[in-house]
Length: 344
Ligand SMILES: NC(=O)c1ccc[n+]([C@@H]2O[C@H](COP(=O)([O-])OP(=O)(O)OC[C@H]3O[C@@H](n4cnc5c(N)ncnc54)[C@H](OP(=O)(O)O)[C@@H]3O)[C@@H](O)[C@H]2O)c1
Image (cartoon, rainbow, N blue to C red; front, side, top):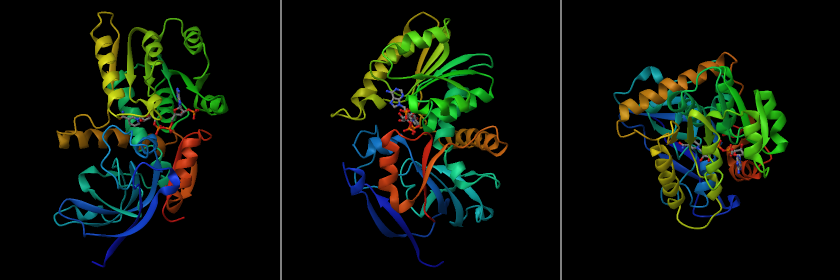
């Protein structure tokens, strides 16, 4: 096999996006169980906004290559690894390492991408699709006819969750900045502005009996309203602490404080549930974790392939413009996912 190199983006420390670095690095040939993936699309997730501030719950030490997920073609596999993978288009949730032209990924973490699906479109539903699917169908288990409140329905996860819910016959009230309310309407959601001082009252008036599930990635004081807005038997799915992205201090404390609050609510004998969704939960049982992720992402890809889901591509930028991509994602001006394309 010829010499393998990758061009990758490096996050050197707590820096502004412009301080991201680009480097070439030699890759070892894929080891047993590994695949070499030529990256066709990766993207900016909220996690990278937190990581560059040192605020992601379990980020690795600096320096490292960010990139929560990727879509690409398998170029080679290691010894004893299914050779039929070579040439196929695949996706993986990597947490880090996706912002590169090539990556070594455990073959068991790869999920096939339907041939008809554009790599950038597929990219928008990798981590976002798994997260949205699992929160809706494995955690909240809302039935058709139910009503949910999705905070940040214009974002990568939120726009996917909104579409999955609408596809399942669920009514969606979504929060976003007013500039994104037309996008929400196009996705089939009823929009509310999360900065409205009377957001909770507005949400209540749209569903007086409450919500069968509230999806909250914000945390902070507003999560009390998310809890109070639940209908009898409803579930609060908390899955982030975006409110503390810019707050100095320990990255873990806000998460631990949130856990404590959810545990307390969950223990109350009132028929409502509160849970924290973490995509990585259960990964100690690796085979079961991988099987679940593969099963769920495969269902999301099938919905993308048959047109039930529409990819929310906010912008496509070259990989080398990762700094601009991160700035754009952080600007709050775009809806959906900012996608990085190494071949541009
Ligand atoms: N727990 C897990 O396993 C897991 C997995 C994946 C993602 N996440 C979390 O999911 C969240 C979304 O990630 P993403 O990549 O989809 O981010 P994203 O694309 O940057 O979207 C962020 C969304 O949040 C909205 N928003 C900003 N401030 C808000 C506020 N105060 N109240 C309500 N909404 C607000 C934005 O709305 P506008 O742009 O309209 O202002 C946008 O819709 C992040 O918090 C991330 O950490 C968690």
